[in-house]
Length: 111
Image (cartoon, rainbow, N blue to C red; front, side, top):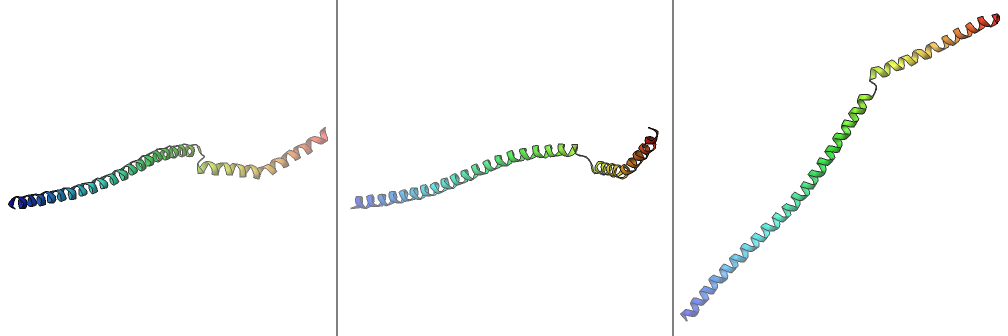
């Protein structure tokens, strides 16, 4: 009987060790699942960062293009000067027309 008891004890120890191994494997499996989840998140973050970088480069090009366009636009002072010149032309045009009519009227009797 002592051999049977010894075998039973050894079997119990073996089963305890197997249970510990099973628990340990389950914990390792859970950690691996967490790592795989994190890997997916990291991959997604990497893709998002690359997309943002490409968008940033495109936006930088657009900003440079807009700066070039703004550099070629007339300044506020230029616009005001042009408007004043047009206003002056509109104001003086009737006077010039009157002078031209008067000159024609003076020349017609001599022709």
